[in-house]
Structure formats: structure tokens, C-alpha cells
Image 1 (cartoon, rainbow, N blue to C red):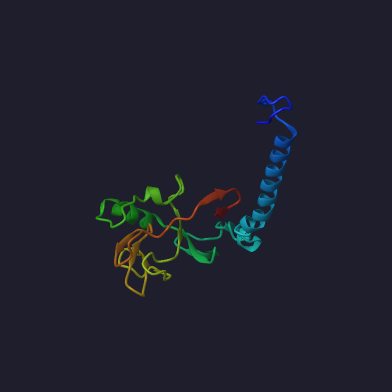
Image 2 (image 1 turned 30 degrees about the vertical axis):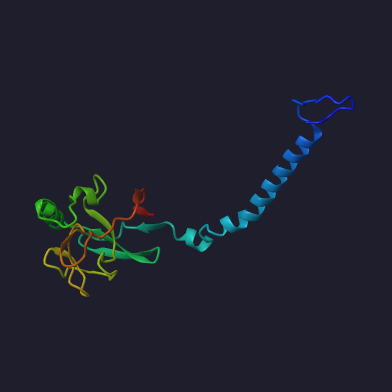
Length: 180
């Protein structure tokens, strides 16, 4: 409040020039703060070489029935397995077994593509790479600590707490699958 020359108190309800200067200064400080913080925030984004590894395309058309290929994705092995009818039948029969990490065979592959199983080939116990065809359930066996996975990648025996993980993937035309 200001006192005019005649000694009465005057009140100003409308903005004055000083208010505009304060608003302008606060806006400038906020803009400068954002400009200073942006490099710190932007450096937390993944690097270009990491983004390049985010997804890969794999040609699965040459994988024969009963074979698997191993591809590297994000530094981990991924098993692309072309399952035989016997392997699929064994996996479906195991749906009702006492499983540590319960999952049906149908939940472990894409609908209509039961003959293809794509899993991350890292044991869920300590991160070893399991070997195919050496376990008693016809699937993978981790020789380090004895975890046994069935033909659907589900843990059946041993210390591993979880099934082999499923990556995000989609089948594309021309016999390719995009992982990631």
C-alpha cells in the first residue's frame, strides 16, 4: 500500500509494472533451470549402441524340425527351438504336473505356433546357460547346479526358482521373427 500526498491510504487492485517484472524474472529463472537440468536428465537415456540392440530379426525358416538355433540378444543367448510333435505332446502332458512356477504350454508360445518355442537361454538360478537334450524331461539341463527344464522351458527339478524367461517377440512374414 502506498500513501498518497494527501495522507490517505490507497490500494491497487490492478497489476502494476513491478508485478510484470517479477513474473518475467521468475519465468527466466525457471527456463534457465530447465536448460541447466536437461543435459543431466538426457544423459540417463540409453546410448545409441544400446538402442541398436533393442531388437533383432532372426530368420527361422532354415531351422529344421527338432533343431534349435542360439542367437545373442541384449548380451544373452536366446533359444529358437523348432519343436517336434513328441516334444509338444510331452510339454502338454506336463501342464498338470506339480510345477514350481506353474504355466501351461499354451502360455509359453504364440497362438497357432506351438511348434516354435523362443526362450531366453539363461538359467534362472545363477545365470548359467543350460544345455538342450540332457535333462530327464527332454528339455534343457543346467550342468552347474542341476536345474532341469522341460520342452516348454518350465522348471521341473533343481534349484532354479522360475521358468526360462520368454522375450517379447513377433513372427513376421518371410520366415522371420523379431525379438525385442
